[in-house]
Length: 392
Image 1 (tube, rainbow, N blue to C red):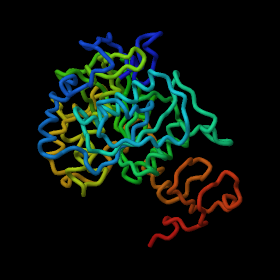
Image 2 (image 1 turned 30 degrees about the horizontal axis):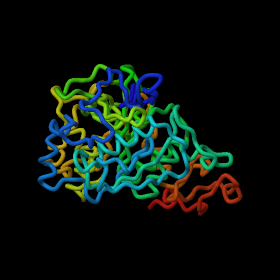
Image 3 (image 1 turned 180 degrees about the vertical axis):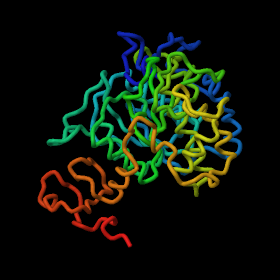
Image 4 (image 1 turned 180 degrees about the horizontal axis):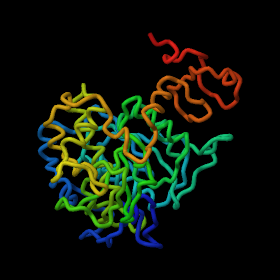
């Protein structure tokens, strides 16, 4: 959901607003800041029959979702009654456009009227885009910003999130991000990511490029691939990208937009419903459930909609215990990382501590004794205790 949901562009002056997409923006009618957005304003709500899910008690209750995006205005009328906590590790001076974006995505998840998972607990983490600025307390000595993707993913896991959703652009290919994703895969945390709205191949860009991450492209309310949606090797599934009505903090009006920025949290919401319904399923089995229950005419994978259109009804009604406890996204082709061996390295505690940031669960158990005195090692260190050294 942004003229390029992967690159937030200020729509107000330059284009139209942070949520504007490749398609023209259409003002809602009537458009007023006083209007409360309802399910009637969100076509995806009826498309996915979310009223029926709610009637059966599937609301994401007991599930904690993390949103990495702009700030969330918890005073927005549509978010009244939602459980939202800002867990950002530092202060960010964010624009009105960034505020619009973050509030919109939070609403798609937990708005009491039209959120996919209205009873889920939402933790928000403010990152930076080209319209906002990180505060002085976001800088760490010799390390990456606290607002980096690796930092925010690790902070979200530290805080207990089991599903993380991201809809902003990144070209970060760092070791720190690789190990954050490896941690998520090792500890059963699912990440969804918007593939983008530039209508181009995004195989090398964004979180979707990483193994294990659920890359989400956009379709319209007829289930047809949206022409603005990007594609690539990282796409796992697709969901409705619009029209989505959101509160524009630049103009003071409610407007409509389209984009995969909306598709990614919608799929995160589906996973929350499935987690609530199937509490004993592993994260790997939930991912298996996602890719095996899609609406897909040919039954295969393609770079535009992945394994097909996500289906919340099928996910709720299909027991994931029939699927193996294996991550179906562990190898996206083309040498994607982290590899299964790298995930084992993380789990076994033999990754160089200097490459891991803000991870409160990591203990170094390798053989490098210099880590005992290294100023780049903030983690507990127990030399030679990795399980790989004590196999039967």
